[in-house]
Image 1: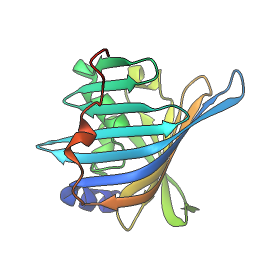
Image 2 (image 1 turned 180 degrees about the horizontal axis):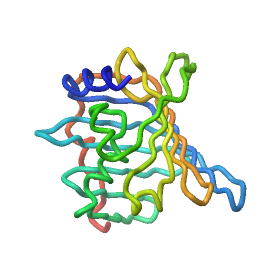
Image 3 (image 1 turned 90 degrees about the horizontal axis):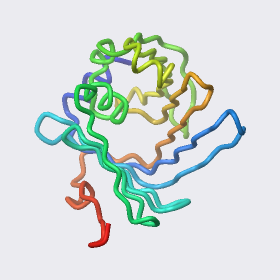
Image 4 (image 1 turned 90 degrees about the vertical axis):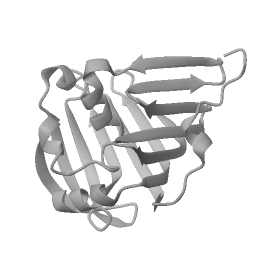
Length: 193
């Protein structure tokens, strides 16, 4: 599995997919679902990510240059997070399974093979990742990552928080190596934002 991810990382240019994010909150036993499109590209030596959510409300998320920007048009607000010295952790979290090397996972995680199962019609290999960093593990206890062994990319991810909350990301209609519109990686704000 890791060798396939290494091979995919060497040739990685871009990826585009439909995404469904389910955020489960254990305390109230409720799941909130967001649907949209997600984009990844290697620009210079870094991987960038952009997500455009259409449901339930419009929301844009961009990661580039060590900074995360979240734009919520409904309240016309941009929230920025600078990864700073945590850039490696933030990148490994946001672009996990898209353009990253399989062997690089060992830098940040204890990696274990769990199973092979069908996810969205694709026979995928499931890996469990336990963050090595105590600070990171205080936010994310473990990650399950389903990798398409043919393309070496993620088709599903589940991030478990110590509280029992989790986020499940499901990717479909994944397209690789096509030209992406340049404005995908720019926030579409108003003059009043």
